[in-house]
Length: 325
Image (cartoon, rainbow, N blue to C red; front, side):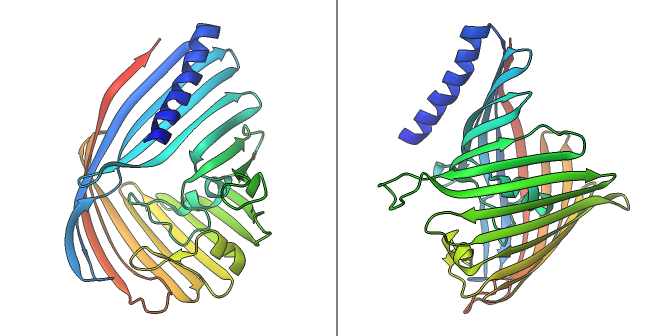
């Protein structure tokens, strides 16, 4: 709770500073998304459950300090029907100008922006086999403007000397770039774990229009040490399990209007795979919809069986507060 309060105060300070020193245009938006649904799954136990699917409360703030400089802030809290507000999904502050954007806090790394985001297309978070799927705390990130066809980015996972056992100020470093060649968008990234020099991960992504939609693909490689230092990979119960070799994976995805599909195959101790499809049924434009997802997956972890699942989730988005001055 102290962390949430501190984050909110910091974000308010950034926005407030813009108001005091520049009498700037200030934006403040508060909204929420309620996501409840029913799921049938076969692993780790066969069950039919009614649960929360990443409901969240979001607050965004911004202050235009001058013609080319803007202060930014973002806070996203997760909640569910049983635990209430139980996690910080994202919480960061930053500045934006002609030089690009610098943000610090709990957020996605540069590796995700250039690689994993390309195939993370489903409504429910589902890129478990990616190297940098999770939002992480203490991330300092820089994103350049798009210059010509090129955009580059970098992020650092800041360490805490003497507190978490690390002896480095920077525990990890991501370097990434995105280039647009006509309709084809390509991404490349490297992730280095600097804590005890525990390996590296590499990723390449591609996306382009296909038929009436967009097709995308990702190739990733992570050394054994890097994969384990990053928390391992989840089994069917969602528990992180250490791998015993290097990890290699390929992900392909396609989305068109209200449908999407994704296929994954990876070497994680054993062969891991996943096939998933979804459909979004609009109810009220920009307010409410129902999404249906079904698939089959295997974690590649010893002792896990193949999981078959299907879910239907009702999503209701509502604005709580909006202001601009």
